[in-house]
Image (cartoon, rainbow, N blue to C red; front, side):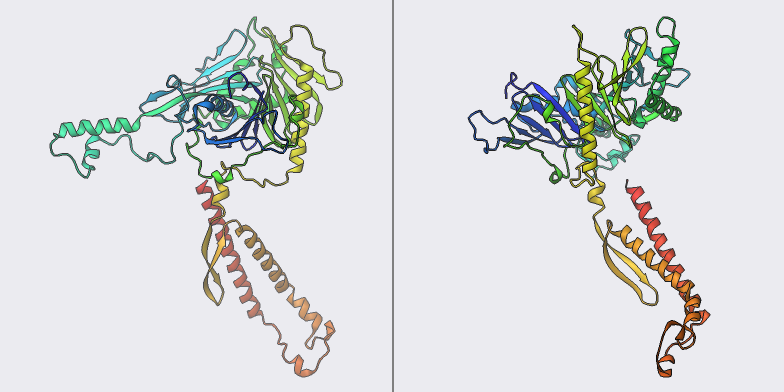
Length: 526
């Protein structure tokens, strides 16, 4: 693929954080959720038969060839901008974007509320910097979206360096731990060599990551700096905003600001860490290829995905789905404004426009969209129409996909929950037995056993009614038999009932302990 025919026409990120990019020559690139592997589906030649499958190239991201390096850089830039954790392979980033530091810590400290002084840009954007300069937050003039810039360590192998290593350990102690020290070196030279080795091991390669977030759904790591920016944004200044316009905001921003205020005491937060350089579940990578019988169409509208989309980029406009009980679509045209659907009323959209002197909200309806004017950067009518279609496709996919049949490689609990183990089960008056059982089936087994115990308790509690109805010979229940048969039915004594109830209570306590231990183990593992 040459640079002339690989112009991007559509970029899609799904809810599992897999990416699909379509180019102008009808080729497409599929990136796995972890970002470590991709498949490039080339466009078929014009003379190809309709049943002929297109050529596919499958490679590891970090080992991609020079022919597809530019494609991967643009794909990773889009993925890292909207994914929860970035994927940063060292082999793809140029030296100008990498910085070598002695030690990289993920914790960041933000300024206090009383001492913070956010910067206000010329267009009304609010910029908040961390104390150590590792991260910054830029709130758009509309107050509905924000960008974050932070320093992140490049992707590494899992457990490539022990995290429990104490950085305060003296060089002399590490020199003593060396099993075979060189006898030709003096103790001073040995200590210098150990210090150089320690510094070499602690060097990390970092890069700057840019992410784009919505004020309607904020991660806890950005809640505190966002509260500082929103507080500065809502404060009227002379000559900047009208007080009435500053008080006008949408319900989603109010909820997010309330949520952000709950994190005002947490000035220390952990920055997002990069994913491991290697995926340990490549068998879970799924690729959605196009049907060879479907005629390719250059128009983007018929190719809207029938799956759960997280972010969609088309013609420079970003469409974001805010998942929830009532999904909402947000549109970022790129001028600092945001267009958002109004919850249940999917045919109504609110445009939060940002101006140099005020913020104004305009409501649109699909049946009466404003006409395009000359010199307009984007068409409000086409943008809102496409956003409505994307939201409708998302709702249809949400109603269709009852269960996630294809697990993502990013979900570690899927593989860890299916491990089998041997458990000691105690049976009253029978001892202990070993039963192999899967962790995934334990809740169902426990529920079934509890239901059996409830039924047993019910029969014991109502046993006196059953005995009263039957009588000594069982006549009350329609029992007809001889006295020899009736002699086999002995009356139940109270001691037997008490003993059975004690066994049942002990069984219930054992099951409760098992459930508590399982929940504690699961919380510790997570």
